[in-house]
Length: 486
Ligand code: SF4
Image 1 (cartoon, helix red, strand yellow):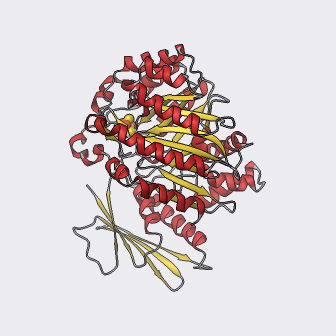
Image 2 (spheres, helix red, strand yellow):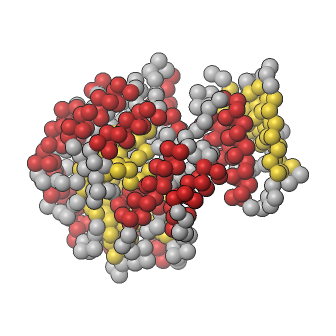
Image 3 (cartoon, helix red, strand yellow):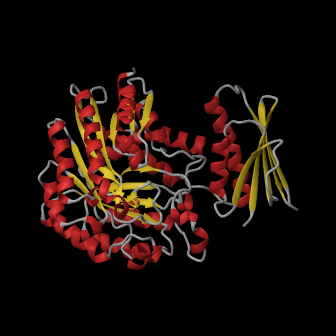
């Protein structure tokens, strides 16, 4: 594998530069280090980002090849936003020239690109002005520029009427799954090992719920999301207990959306769906990820294609009229043909929304840890595949309504949520736009307090279930500290 080293002489913008370089050369090993350090091994290419005399000098030295040099003059080095943009623009130009590649998202390496369209939109800029800003400042392709603006416009419409001052959203995490998928990076816990402690976990979850309900008693609950893990990995009576506690402890009259992520089809039964139907749940998710059995087996999903279609029809039969399905593109061994097959099967099922994820090989995922074992299998994604998903969603009457990016995504693309009008996942948008406070309960959840001036403070619960149980009082204290500024 080719190696590129990035040398910095200052602890600034390292993550931004590293991410952008890595986006240009995902197939290479990229190592960053500071001047004076001696990194292990040789480099095929050395990129030096050196600060001095009120600016940066960027130099690329190819082993046995040419040297490129660009100077970044800074009018005001203390303006971090402008400095970062100038530096990233320079890195982009140099690596675009070196690799003869362009990146659809230009210089952007963050996870919320739609925010960059939303801000000028809220300030009253028209479409043409916003597009010019995205292209000139961040070098976005025309396709991604239009996508970001379309979604910003739609999000704004969907969020109209949300109360950011007195309203809040509730997240309840069930961190258990029947088996752990090969690509999982959520830190979910295998049920086989944890089954005996699930009730104990739920006892703690309900204590956290009791505190939150009391603390927010004068606020308006607007969306509820039961996620995980896989909430339906609970038994029907455990699920009944959780939903019952939510529905009785919190006021439901102002709730615009109540989602239960059923998730893995191998956990869904008619009994559990009937339990969910007894509560004011408005939206569920049944997630195939792919409709190719070979891939499902390879990534350890532990269910069949027939189980996906069977549980989907079962849910429809029980009256669920807002069903989302999640897909992943870039799964091992899957190219355009396999994705086309999946999309065709999804089209026949006619879900109400579709969320398309580009596989992100996060460090924690076993798929990445054992990547050598899968070396001969491709991890492909392409603009053609993303466009195919978009066209299929459009063919089902769906529009893109939310979008986010992750680190290490296959092909450097994005995750997009498509939905029929009125069937969008409002909670998904709130997570991305960060406009409303979210009280998040359970192991690994992150609560967010959004202040009127836009300041955001967070409080995290520990990820490990046994730590969460042992330290539940501390988790409640953390939440109290976040919510009441004490
Ligand atoms: S279903 Fe989701 S949370 Fe559970 S193991 Fe698979 S990827 Fe992880």
